[in-house]
View 1 (cartoon, rainbow, N blue to C red):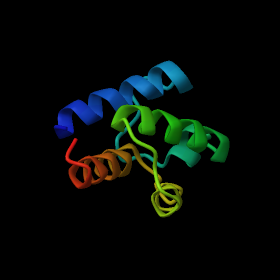
View 2 (cartoon, one colour):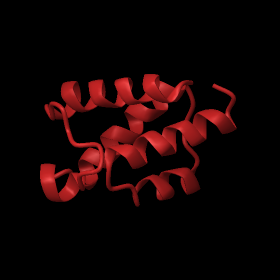
View 3 (cartoon, one colour):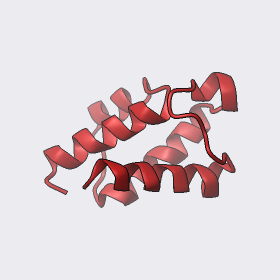
View 4 (cartoon, rainbow, N blue to C red):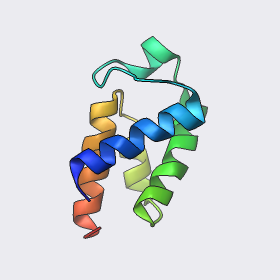
Length: 85
């Protein structure tokens, strides 16, 4: 999966699911958009759908440390590479 495709999908998810249009890629989601743990859980479900696979517990735990869109993109790109998606 190409990085630009991942970015496009992540931005679509944020627009559709969280009604966050054009977020800054390096802005802290919690501080700027009040993105909380409930939102993070919903995002994880969307990422599983995007990847077509369930995340392991360690992968979920790692995801809960993410703070920016760029970090989400890096995370998905890394997982896609590991899973040859």
